[in-house]
Image (cartoon, rainbow, N blue to C red; front, side, top):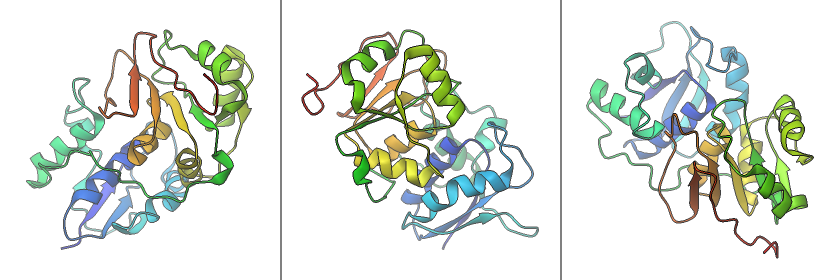
Length: 249
């Protein structure tokens, strides 16, 4: 039976809820943006919907993505884990979602997020480039952004909001900015790139959903996005390996 879930939180929550839907049986399923809240980032539901809709609807296991309307029946409210105190730093954000799903519906105990769950067309513009992103939250001041800029230089391409780029430049130095209209565009750039580097943001969640080469600026106080896989590094102490990208060394 096709299911309908509600999403209410950050964009990263919605990306991980896509993972849940990708592993639930009897899809494709529906996802509704709940209208009785402001997201943690302060976006109104309509703006949040516009940011997410193209990425969500690109997924074969989702048949519908729209704003919640009066009378809609929502089988599982994905953001409920936060109000129930189930968000813990000792496990991944996905695991917190799944624990809540199991507790409230009895389904989903085998969901692990080990397989790629986001499917997009790679953007050829990003070939040979490294996509980077850094938001204002979840920063680690020991992360070697200065070294990364020196090492990769012109290969770097910043995605995110303009004020995030301006803050990054004022802190670490000049890097090219690529404005994006929504998160599908971000996902296509990451998919087409050689690697993603960034903090625990929606872009990082997208990189995880793509199982893309990545280096994460891990926030020591809340390391809830550590997914162990061979092509991902999670840097919390300032040490990481910078792979050779197109002759960078």
